[in-house]
Length: 566
Image (cartoon, rainbow, N blue to C red; front, side, top):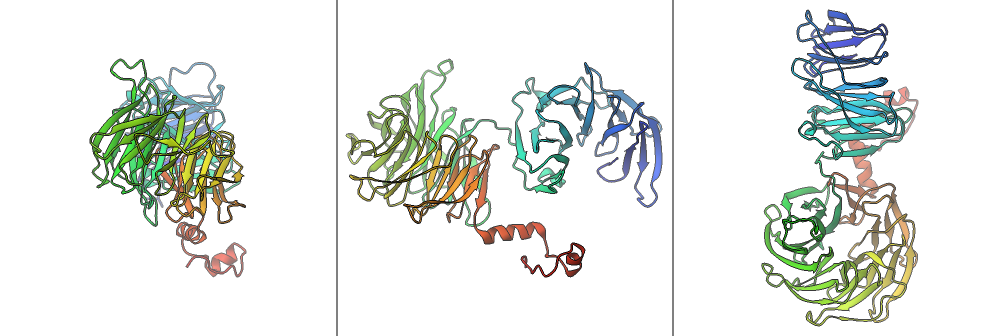
């Protein structure tokens, strides 16, 4: 059975294939408006549009039918056609406006989720496959605005699809979606008012409320860079879709985006860096595709933006370097007058004069192969350069036109995918391709001291981030499967893990107090994780509401549990 959105109509289905339409404006005296025979078998599932004028149902004999019931005396029936082979529909959902029908065919391998458009008179088009589920689908639900479709399955997944603009596209294979992991077999789904919350019922693990749901942005390209200002009040995320977004990081509460998207010559973005004074940000790009005939150059680009007013950023200037190679990383010198960029190729370290940000000018290149990451050591002119094939090197750029390497690669240095240093430059960490994190004490840069390496990752450690004092370290696998780990480095010879988040998260950075971290999500938002107990308790109390009364304690068989929430 199912009500219309305003509760004025109720539709019920029974085991004999009959449907009944009820007037429930007066709930104490419901009035039967119409009954009709839908088919020869039991009603498996049914759905009602918000207005109550359109009804869809699936039966045990595999028919899927739509009825227009605007006038209960003249019910109009429309059978979904164009279905081939054996059909066994188990779930059905109807968009709030009654114009999109979602079905799941359990008789076909892959349990395809099908969508069909319904005309104003109730006539359905031939269904089209949205996707093929690897698991048995148990429930479907549209958001109140019809923009999202949630699909639950027995393998503890809920997949939320952006279906808002599907009917204007020929190709549905790139339809954007996100997956919400559940603790158990999903048995029911329901969106809250406004579509910002999703309730998920499971077989044996109770119900979970996802609130707020990440926005369905429709972006599918990964975020390649996430950087913060030195005081961690502002962050920037740079994506392969060609956009970068600024985020304010309040001392309490979730991060929130600010200002319009930043771009760089229309190219996919690879790296980002803030100037020390927080007034400028540098973006780096992937190299243009050789097959793109609209471009006269195959050089990657560096773009500088004025973010003195983050809500109104202004592009300052562009520079070209790294012919036919990606620019993987960028870092400003402590005085903000020099910018280093690193990319693929042989002479991959480029030193720029950005004293005039409107006209960034490359000083010179250095013979460093395959630069993956960069980190200045405190307020010095020494920079650590992480490479894909030549370990971690230390370079001095005091004379930008004549940079020189300080020594051989750091002892026990791997080929590094990511680097981070403390504010004083005395501690350096490198995430490597061998699934480990390496640490060095650089109190004496001419004689680096290796510290114990950190284990526990399942792939390349693509992002590392130290707090300014070097007491905490965040390590992640980036956008690849693997854990995100927060480490306590109070005793640098005996680091210990503080928190571990399993599964694919994203690129991460420590928050302002280093008692948690921010990670990118699949929909290009930032998610805030905290390890602070008082913050977690406060959040749970907000969700739970008032504490149990004495009567509730008796009801649930609990005694003297005390008061956690005040």
